[in-house]
Length: 153
Image 1 (cartoon, rainbow, N blue to C red):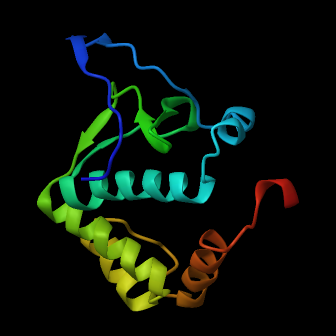
Image 2: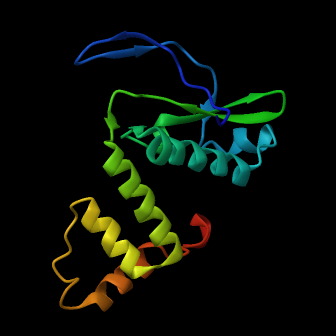
């Protein structure tokens, strides 16, 4: 697997999840990232790999992925993502897991036919696809565009 830190659950019920304390700093703390010499691109690559594994391989993922649920722990010069708050999770069926994997691949390749087939396999219907398929392509091109760094927006 991909090196990461996940706190152990100490208590779980339908309304409460208690996990052990894990040291680290917020993934958005630019001062701490710089102080520890964290390679931000490598760290984010690792985070993306972790979520991709959860979604496309394991079929079980944290359904609340936001910066508040991510920390960083530095061990021996290596920055490890800390994944917090598994209170909201989703387990995918094999069909769904494969459908989302196909959707991601088709999106990466900008393959409209494969995108539409993957969406259909997941039960996602776009009301414009049959009449104006070029709108699908325009939507996906916009959605998957390279937006550049946040400070240049």
